[in-house]
Image (tube, rainbow, N blue to C red; front, side, top):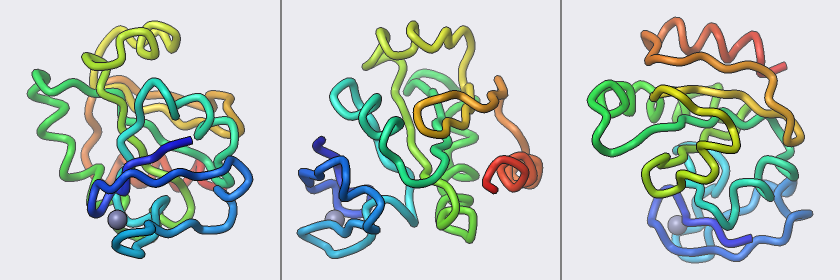
Length: 142
Ligand SMILES: [Zn+2]
């Protein structure tokens, strides 16, 4: 799969089996799967969710959605903290990828969903206060 580095946005080609080896960006050498949210698209969404070595929390959002934009800094800050080592933080732009949003029955945004080995564990619709978001993830990150 091809993933854009969340730090420098360079495109990196990753074999599915390398996901569990803490892959680093070929350009900036920062970790691809921790420290900042990964932007997913139609080409890598299913492969990443299926092969991720840790649970993946996806922020289903859209650029026109005010509450999504307000929540984005809390999502990024949580990804940069200790929970960023225990989960993979990812974002899906539902406006750019309507088929994925539809496949996951996303009816309101932001919707936050945690997946493990491709299976959805839990979701919440609506932005959470940062503290509540972290507590929710703590419970699901084990
Ligand atoms: Zn990079």
